[in-house]
Figure 1 (cartoon, helix red, strand yellow):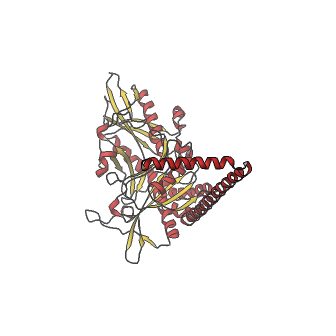
Figure 2: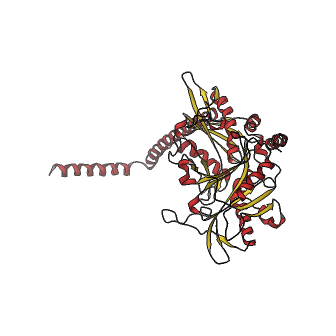
Figure 3: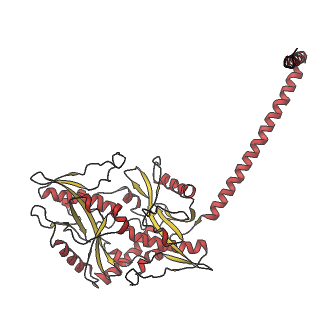
Length: 471
């Protein structure tokens, strides 16, 4: 018999003997042995389970303690007046206007386009929405992503691509005058452009005369340029500046079959346009009663920068000083708002240049989800980047050691399309910032009862200051 066969035969005989042994064992002894084995297995599993639960509990407690230590909750109202002080009183020029509480999207995309459409139709033109276009991959772009706003037909059937732009007056501190600036003007994407000038009482609808256009550097290829019209230098009166700027826009206006540059002046709240004034957006509904929620993005940025500055000083325990006022290319000194960074943190060896960027949690219709979009980040101008953003629940402050897109200078953080509401989206964004982008969460300032009332009272004081200085 070969070695292999001897081994197989031996194993078979051993198994037979074991079976015979078990067969002749008393039944109670067999059951007793089985119970002992089963008891040992259960006891072993119980021990392992208890050890796993204990480990998970310890890890959970440690994570909770770490989160409590890292994320500090601060009182929002302690920083309210500091934040508002960073917003000049001229920002409250539109306080009391019927459109004051309307956000930028509601006034620009919704109200201005609806007004222009109605005005053009009353002047004998036929209008229709711009057709949806394909992106570079051949897919149709989402609603609101068209390269122009309206397709307009005259009485002879000729069609024109028309862009609609809206702007408010703002105070240019460096020039000491009022400024009207229309942003994101893409000259090559349209054939005619309608400018809607918003004053505290009226909307002035004009054809653009093709003048006062300026480039925006590298960003022009993506966002377009801007149309800037200045009022009189060292003229604090807004009403006088409105007359000067409107006169500039009326001169040599771009005419369309003999029409005058000024199409219409509409009193805000005019019942004839009642359906237009009632227009709202998701963002407006969310932030209607939230401090800073409906401020212009640039003004809200100033406020949140001042708030973040105080939060960083307290949470990080550092000394903060103003940024250096460097020189422009032509040798002139930069203005206070034109510094290369926002502030500096005093270090033993050096002063670290710091930049603060802010964003509002907004709903992007084309993607059907909430997003955060931090823009105009110049990565070579600072050492540390802080991101501050708002939800209807409060203000979040983060520090990011990563780098945004160098080409666009943006940091876009999308939520999930599966988020059922803004609260779920807020949690998704918080998780992404810490886990996906490896950002450090420094502080959270929740809105409490009475915060919005305190904000409104402070805004009224700034409005009174504006009337006293610039009426």
